[in-house]
Length: 104
Image 1: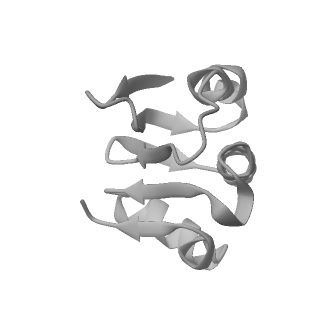
Image 2: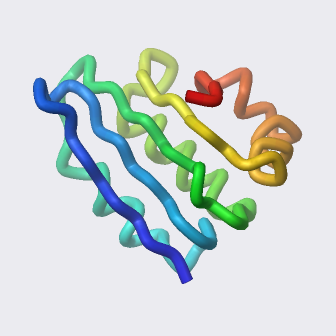
């Protein structure tokens, strides 16, 4: 079971999407709904994975869709606080080359 929470910074320039539990295809629609209405140029997305227990290949695809929505190569998408098992998956898939990945 997963839970996705979205929060917006006070200035409206940063959107944080937190995924708790399993990050897999079962949350595809909920994850997409979390960001789809944010379309402003220069908007920064933070994907908080501190409570993500599991991540599969469909979740990797969803992160790529978020990056594309945010502007592709010009996107400001960061992954924060990934647990060691999730971070390992992201690094094996070379997501550390596509996105900023840092502890906080």
